[in-house]
Length: 392
Image (tube, rainbow, N blue to C red; front, side, top):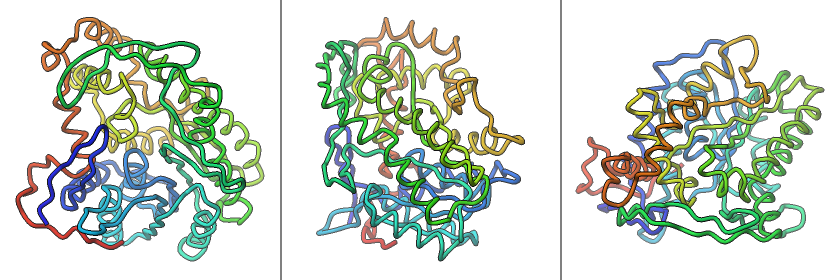
């Protein structure tokens, strides 16, 4: 079928298989240029099909030469519809990894469930024996608890009061003010249940109990802090409470992993265009301005470049993991430079619908968003019939 983009809200409901493959190839090409000596050997990525999780899997294999087991929850093609982008990304990654001669095991299912944890543990035992790095990169709007059966839904809301700020409609290019009502206490608790550290800890406890963690294993989960202008909706909002729970979980895991010499880290990453970030009010406009500033300074990174830098410089660039004073891995260091944030703040005050393209990189934001789903790659003929029924 001929596949065209169909955008609804902050999601594209179609994905292009050849475009997704091109996106994976693009990241692989960068990873191959940055070889990491004495890096990870066998890596488990929980949430491996898009964004930072996919980029981590690519960096692990094509910078470190690692075997990988990837866990994700994606939809295959059904009833004449395309598969999800993450499905096509994984099909492409699996093929390129196997061509490179490394193990690539992909498990599709609900990472929150006990069944997928058990299936993953068995796959580790059967394929690599044990893992020396576990990356937790699950970004889901809801979670069903495996023990109680209760389903929680996360919210993108401030805490304590209504939040008003600028936002951009990426379809109409209109810059306007948006007001978001505060989360209830129950909504905050539910957001922590979905996006906090409980499931990360459940994974590590299960892996440790099954004796599939190497001595000295590292594990990390991803977080974001951002600038003060996004604090109300992010750092000080319901999501921020979930991210605080990640920090708490890392400390708990450092204790529980001590018998195997393991360490847990939270990596604070740069703001980037992902399916998750595009859903947060205010953030797309901030990212568009940030991209313009960082590109002009020559320090812009996509997911692929950032994860390769994390592997090369922070995880395996020295005798120990390179952390900030707070114990976190700070991959947002370039974003949070004083000169970068000062320029972003100046533009934020001036930007409106009339000067949006002049003062921001909204065009780059839109292109990166479409690339998530395999569109807007120059080398792809989007008028050509393609096979959408690809199997893992």
